[in-house]
Image (cartoon, rainbow, N blue to C red; front, side):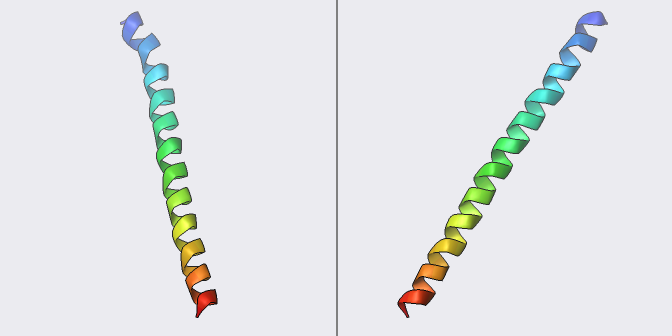
Length: 44
């Protein structure tokens, strides 16, 4: 029981870390897409 209890916070931290990583990747991707569309609009 104690081992499971000790393992739980690490799991939560790990999930948060992955979630932040994914969110960062999505934000970066979205920013790149908007940035390229703005550049294309400027070319026109």
